[in-house]
Image (cartoon, rainbow over all chains, first blue to last red; front, top):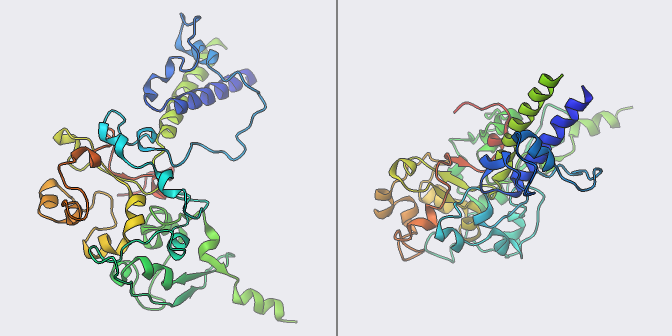
Length: 223
Length: 131
């Protein structure tokens, strides 16, 4: 039984990595992608055993990294490399080289990039000098669970967006009028309209949940 | 026993192929694929690189001034709207950015790629969420 399981694992992993290494044609993964196998006469299954990585058996994908990031368009799996113009598109890393890093999304800290003037995105389609209408107001949302309270900064949001982008369709501009849950965010509602699609995703918990609970401080102060 | 092994191998092959497919797509976070009409019209789907545009414009320009909804494929953009100066055509008019004759700079996706926000959280959820 254990043998079956290990065979299952090795096959799954080897096929996964083999196809990952050759992004163009995942459908052909049954054929040995790495080794030109001479012994492939019987069935595709033994062939993929032969294609299993011959390297160190103790190598371990420590960070569970599934793929490379910031690949140039012809290699990213969405653009068609057979299209000539795909090759004229700018590779992301060329643009990201000078930008401050982050740990999620594009791996670019976009807010810092703009604050540090590494990028100067226009606020108006035509006028490069148009300045944003920035509102500096933090909204603190006390959360039900054990996580720190959420601090929502209008400042960073109004530097990128217009009030009408969020109000009133996504957020009613009134205290206590908006029900927000992590579930709704994950499903692409409320904050999830942007966060998890283009703005940093929910894996970056502490960027929002950033203020220790006042109640926790109070109860600990009591005798 | 032999049969069991065969079954395990078959499952492994399927799982491996599935993993392979899911791991081969490694485009940029926020890349939007639009395939409302392209496949049917025999064109490659459009890939919109969010990152490239946010280096140059703030969200407000497209999402407030130009009226792009926050929904992949939700604006039902076609070439007529673009050459009439709406949506992409507000800038891709040969004045602010290159014009529509460069078809394949936008229509650069692999044929058959569905409309999506690539790498979005909702795309990664294990259970398909309602549309």
